[in-house]
Length: 467
Image (cartoon, rainbow, N blue to C red):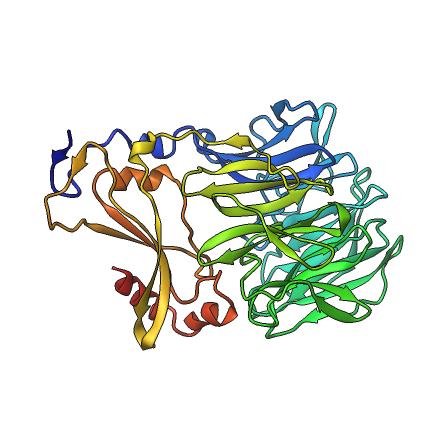
């Protein structure tokens, strides 16, 4: 029998400690053949990130005992601290921002000690077939702006060669299969990477890069996530039609692989956010933000797109084995943050590593995606979580107190998710609305541009309209 009590006064078994205790966040994900690696942020260890490895036999082990803390500060937001490939495992260490290489006796420093603490930083690397590593280096002088460059690091000696410089920002240096070509993204102030970037490939040899060519991008085109397919054809994501879609560079032409009016990527606040991956038979697994939810699908070699049915709301950091296995960081309305393995051929899905649920299912608030009118005869979006507690109900006609959540960025976005931080409130009789105000991503370039020069105006207006 339920107790009738005002909203906001309900007793709940979910404590404040439950919202963080024992939980982990998965920051990065990478594979080398059938060996899977990821970074695990643990609040129980003071927020330290730990490099974790699943061996070929399925055993899960920590590779970086305390005080090691794999995390980079390049572009301040970081990401891309972990690099694996050709049997090597390399990471950026938070304490000094140097590169470290894992060996039989543990990690050892590769790059020299910087002249000042954390003044030389590395991120977003890839291991070349010859054993060297290409990555982004960011150098902070005593005075003035930081400089960004693309460099090649010889892992055996720590020698560093600069191969690209002169732009304000670099990201995503990606070698092709045999290491004979390199593609990367670059841009300058005042653009952010979701505003305007340039994609440039060039031949890569022992002496550095050949002549780079501009194949996509500009001040009004956001290009990101370049990858080379198994046939060494350059694939990338561009919003030239108003939505982040997949393209392939063929004979100096950007060939659209998908023409759907959905964003197939999220804003690149951090490095290493893979939005797609390659499978056997010329297939590509990717996802799209459709009506506030990220839906996974497979693009066939014939151009046909086949959605993959599941109940998840996000599939982040997509990584594949090149055949039929996909790994990603998952979240959903009934799934806490987890690393999931999916076989796209059989549909078999398993959780590699996940978070336990603090609350029984009866306390789970079922989120509802909402679209509502706002100022300027426009619309905004959000996710509403109603009060839910099997032991309580409110008096007839009473409305619950509402918590309005405003995401950061501002070009971020929210989606339905199972999180104990929300259940703490909804189980006590509070409603929560998570707002995708104008300026959020996931709804195309026009929508995310509506906050430009209107910061603190239209976003506030949308949050008031949501309430």
